[in-house]
Image 1: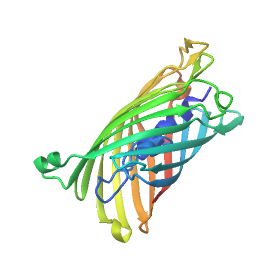
Image 2: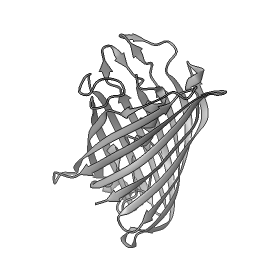
Image 3: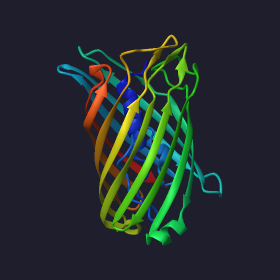
Image 4: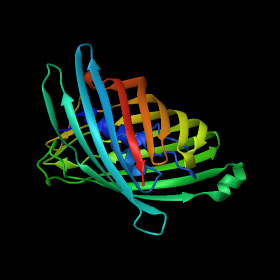
Length: 285
């Protein structure tokens, strides 16, 4: 079964890129992780991201690194776009044993609409809402043979408000893992928000620098084995996500995010998180 670490990384990636900087949008990068690209506000993009999680108690440490390849396209005139996410993970367990493989790919649809009346009422420069829904396809080989098992699913919603140089975001995110022969990894439920301060903001000339802070309450559901819930699995935590976002030219945006635990409660002490880190490049097409 995919570990708790890998599932947390997948969710972190989704948060990290829930809303990336774009001229007409708010400036946010701090918030999920490998599935983050499903909600990038930039409609057409390619991205490479790397996420690390370390968890455990005392000397019993588990370290997971996930590399994520993703992209997005706008095939319709309507405010609807599609995104795909393909994560590859390496997990090192206590004692040095490791495993690696391809995680299940995610295919998601994104609906985004500017809320001009809200912007006028609150005297904002811009605001928007976004809804995301996607399927986690059984294309990986970490939990099951390629092409076997039931798909997982994700859903998310967010609202963003911007009055430069300040932007704010609030979001919810739900993830249900796929199932194979009665085995199912933990799912996730997130709720949170973030604020961004962007003192340098001229993307037309490739100049953007943004300092951001996200916060989230995260709940992880129990794993299942042979159709039965595993007692020592699942838990909850509150995290802060300090982040830096900057542009390199007019088509490349970089981000770095740290996720720091504020409070945690896990049924298995070895699931206790020490830190989470992510960094990546987004190529705006």
